[in-house]
Image 1: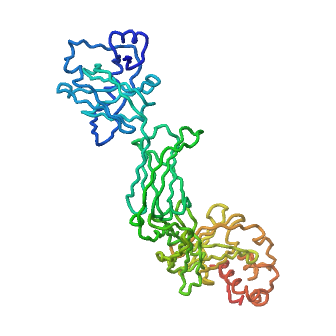
Image 2 (image 1 turned 45 degrees about the vertical axis):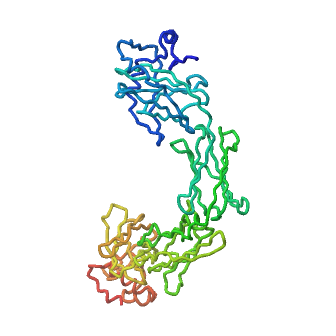
Image 3 (image 1 turned 90 degrees about the horizontal axis):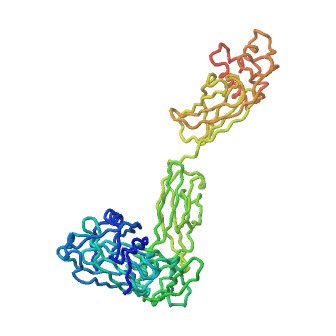
Length: 527
């Protein structure tokens, strides 16, 4: 029989192998001792033993027979092996003296030398070797060692023949509507494993290709939902294709079949319908329709949503397929911004042509609020009017105004007037503020801030003309306090009647009151 060394070392080591074979180094034993733990393996469970790859070295360890009892340094019986698909079990019963010692196996295939050598820590009676850790089939060499005083002592060389196992396909039905396909005895270096499956009913009209998933125990698995095969009953065919390299062709490897009975078909289930991303303040949410194991394949989902009693704000939406689920988003602005309870009816069209309606959860959007909207425009030179919309409460609204020039040194507060439903308006006498450019407007309702806004004021919005009224007259004094008042308006008692249009008269008077606030001016003269 051809003799092997456990490690292919330097020439000095090879010479020593003629005296004592196989060889292992002290450095190697240290690596083995510190990186392995004893593991018990039984024939009922396949476990992967711990392995180490010793470092190559020329230092050789020898132990004399006088140092180690013969009962420890010899096998009491030959090793036996048994191949189970892609695993190899090594059986050995230790002697009483060997019970407290570690036994290790160095294993490799004869093909291509020792390029696949692996070390395994032996179990008490059985050690299971995953053949996926090795290359090729045919003769395998096993070197046995017992570790004494932290050093491995050679016990025996054994050989066994490993045959290439045939791939096996097992199929189970764990629950109605589901097939679980398990594939074993495939090489570990495959780049692709594909499984086409179809029912024999109506030929291959529902044939589907599946990518098998690799499992830690070396097997591959596929989960098949019968709804993807029209819930057909009768015989199903399963083929197995493998690919050795990314550039190679798919190779037909094996086939199997199973019969699906009526009892394996689930009773018809409704899809799962639920709401998510509910924001009652913003008035938005999403409706999700999700297929279940027992649900027929969905072709289309339509959703009707409304909140008025007569469905006057009803809107139909077609759900979009996203990540396997059908989903539609709802916003109350698309329903006339009505703040009420929203009804959702879901209509599912299945691939077999049937259509079923379902009632989804009702959503309370009575507290939904549109964002506050701010706008401004020049009412006339020296006066900026503002409009604040989407104010849902009737509590008084006030706003603070200041220009960006010199910070808030010109900050003034003004009251707003409710002019329509959810709408407040106000005016800003520009002479109360400094300069032009960016102006800030902060709106409050009670102690609650409704929003911070800005507007642009240019020099043309402000009055630059000189005061031409006679100095000391009331008209001169009013224009000094309210520069936006125009020259040549005549006597002050005619301003409100003759020179200002009826539509603007009240606003002008209000602005004069704001401009002259705290001044000793008789406003009655303007009426």
